[in-house]
Length: 149
Image 1 (tube, rainbow, N blue to C red):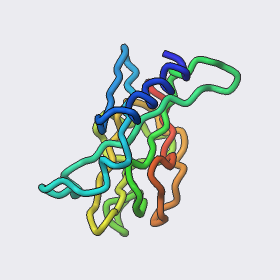
Image 2: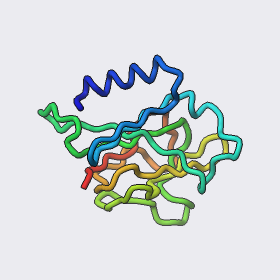
Image 3: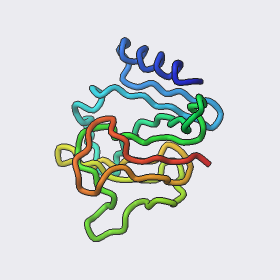
Image 4: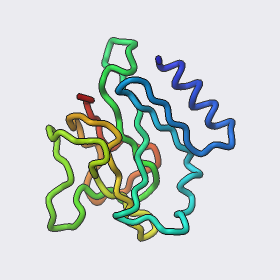
């Protein structure tokens, strides 16, 4: 799958009534979600125990057309305040260089007084943390770059 294929999937999602599209091939996984999916919280509420997954987009290596080169960007699935740790006095969930597993918490985004724990959808090494602690983030804003392993 190349960047053109991904753009076709994005357009198909935008033009459909679906709110989420998941594509998997071998070890790669692409999750696309519409912003409207996060306009309201589910009836059960979403807190630290109820997780909303982040969008995963492959990041091309410079100078290559191979979109699935092993790096993914974890993006904010909603507007809110980004927190690297579960509490002000706690250690961050992850640091640059850490190895993360699928389902491992990466951060919290507080939205409308709800704490939304964002989990990794890939196994890999954290290469970059792109958001600052306790700062606002926008929907789709890159938060982490992870190299799949």
